[in-house]
Length: 79
Image (cartoon, rainbow, N blue to C red; front, side, top):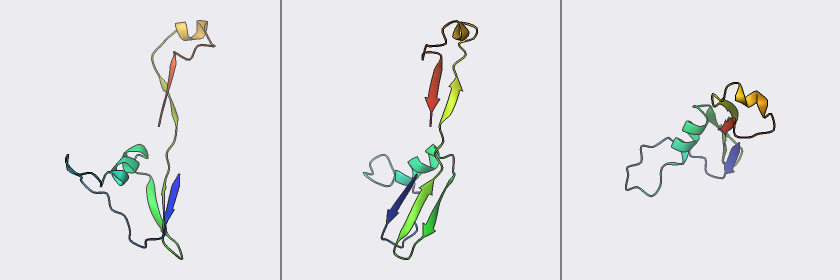
């Protein structure tokens, strides 16, 4: 995913305190992308991008999962 804005300022991951109302955006992007994000300068502004993948998690349903192939309860999706 990516976001473009007109500011040339490079964003920084901040350590927002529990009472802060802002400063968590890049921390969330960093966590969701496992650190795979960056900044590209543009002619006017910048693009902040993140590689946010989707993975299929094994929930340990075991042999019962094969018995009901149409069931969604055996799998979970995670960002």
